[in-house]
Image (cartoon, one colour):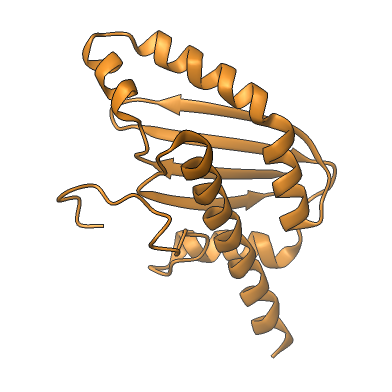
Length: 155
């Protein structure tokens, strides 16, 4: 029974992290991702978000300016470091040492990486493994009203 509670706390924490990151993206970018999932490994947290490019960014990509979109995103995320690190620290109860964000194109993904001063607890690591080994939703964002739905994406 205690193992089930620990697993729920790990899975619940990962989903809360995903939901809060989606909410932050929507608040600060004006558009959120279509899907997000969090993964906890040792002293690292990865949040992978699908979709979420703004109309202006999509237009700049159509013009062939990937580097400008990436440069602006990186500058913006650098400015957001303290806010996002504080948010993740509050959610996890752990000290964030550093943070990095990277945007990828075709398909578009944003990967957020947080490094902590200690290793993840067993329930968070187990939830990450469970989310990879089963068809469960461990670590996925679940708050539909915060997720931006792509037309015809089936999500």
